View 1 (cartoon, one colour):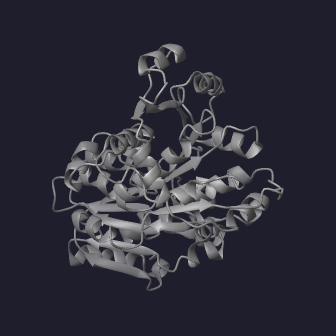
View 2 (cartoon, rainbow, N blue to C red):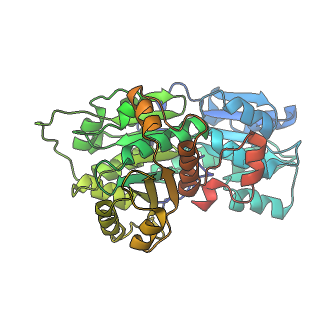
Length: 424
């Protein structure tokens, strides 16, 4: 969620103005309301409506309900540009804010009101949980105008303030180790199981296969973006991406092997900036080739993941990838996924860890029948209860602190003390 998301590219929180983001960036998203308000009483609704009348121009969408009602409704509707929530009528508001982060897009600007007027509560909500501003009741329209309107106004919130999602680069130590399969299934887990706004990016225009694994189509939009980054904005990438599920899109392309793609300088930065404004998680299937585009993606990612298998040649290349310098937003070494453990003729996990001189974070057993059958019909291998699915869930937890529990309430309670938008 926007104000509840931390921008790893050192940009302060906020939401882009309609004017600076371009007429298509927000006006083109006809499914998004400008403001959605959930309040528990008529007086609060009237104060908000009157205080923001000039800015709203009749475009507000008002609902009666508390934070729990807001979460339920937002699961079924497009995320608005801005959201005002009422934290009254409930003792679990702080934990429920963690659940709210799961159901809205990263660029949503979140404001809050409530009954608790203590300084500790205000600091926890705004500084600890990232809500942009909090107003205790009672308040009037002048209070709303003074505190909320500047945060929603076009003139006071520039484009640079837009919050961004998290970029995860999946790289195979060499071809055939299963990196594309893991990237596709990780994106599926984020978008379908964890209900995050997710895009699977396959930058390999010549030989990429990530789209096929999810039975998705490819288009020419990605090539246009990489050759002409000045054309990239949030609306452009959203139109170029193909929806696979409600919250899972695939951005991929396919060109002839004889075609030469003229990658423009800065295309990776422009592409990631646009994707991070729209999606909470970007999973990039990034080959380990000496192409500037791939190098830039690996450098700009928030998290690198190296996929290897239990063979000596793969371990040699894994060590070479581990030796690459980290990007500016990366802390510590990349995560290592050991795929196809138990394959015929392969090394044991202990032998692999001894060779790499590290402990492997995620281990995936060799399940060729499951993976190949799923790939042949364009279905996620992680769709079901099996060791492969559990390994992908563990990878999701370690890369983006996502944990899928049996119920939303349980999820909110588990993440209340360490919400995902703060630990990034």
